[in-house]
Length: 351
Image 1 (cartoon, one colour):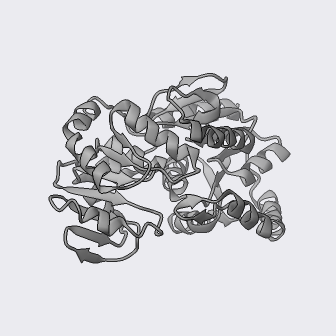
Image 2 (cartoon, rainbow, N blue to C red):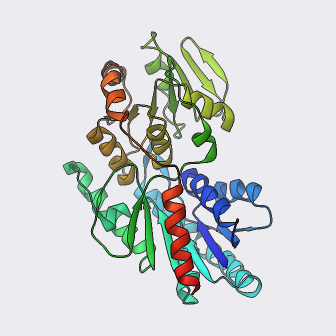
Image 3 (spheres, rainbow, N blue to C red):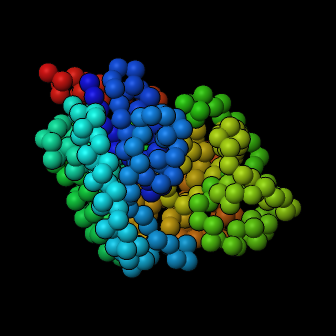
């Protein structure tokens, strides 16, 4: 079967998990991919000749939080040029590939292609939990507008799919038809990693505007901190900044005592898979990150904080034994649940 797979360029989590699914699909099907930005570059290296570049949506940040106005203006500014670019790629795929089925990981180009050509459409992402499931968590008053906006965007992004696979590290009651909740998609390097209870704390920080990281971590001298995300190698006391390499990052994650991060789904899912307690401080105005952090707190897998501070970090570290106990019962059978259900659904559409 010919399958068109759409991956957004905003956030590398979509790309890393889609790579896992695409590798599985390529064992039986002919797959072509559309993506943008860093995700395109990443996937193009993994699947040369199978990835088409498009222009996608991007967030604008200000003071380590999402700027709604900046995001709107940024995407409005590029809308006309991006539309022409994407239309050219649309025609190329239409004339040279002819998909039988489309899969979208919260990506609009593939969605539009499927609807225009009346093709079966499958959604695989973690975002749909906000619209298609009941969230059993308290939503702070100041987050309710963000929740309403996020839910509306999710609902409008890829509506009317033939089936939705929602990847999630927490359980949620499904409230809409044609929906399946599956465990998080885990890359092979994480599955092969051997967890060890080390003495260092790994921090994954994607917002380079957080200038106080070093000063905060140095206030906890009894712990060593490995910090990724600033694209530099530097040692200052008990704080080690590290440039990214997959092997080094996975080894440091597997050997850590706990992790510090924003609220990104993919990294938190990998930490939970390896049973590493999570200190989560979500990027402001991103409800999906708030939701992930809130569930980490609710499940007792770590703590949800508004920001990074020495006092909060001390409180988190004091409770590590409790978090480790709570995480000990977590079980996930790799990616087998999703693969089995996805293969069955594709067979249904091929009849």
